[in-house]
Length: 125
Image (cartoon, rainbow, N blue to C red; front, side):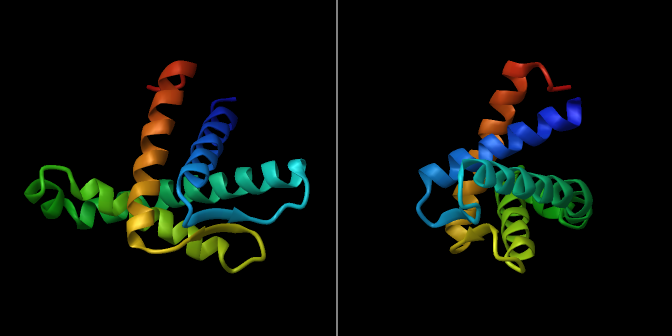
């Protein structure tokens, strides 16, 4: 149940980021149900990228985290969003990210919205 709730929270956060940023979009899905499924699949890919790749990047970039007092987190979140876009770009549907600046803002929006929704729903540890 927690996994499904986290997936929905990430999908809502990604949806809100695509609404707020013009250079970040999710393509695919002809009707509303298809669109929701595309957002859920993108959220699943984003969650897998964050679960598998992000810890390795954090460990390798640990000196940069210390040097920048944690601000390097924005760069890592942007890279994870761009990696999600690249992975889903191999299909006809998925996330499309236009540029690093958009990825930074998108990663920031997704992080904040996911945090707030996790606190509101009580799914935050």
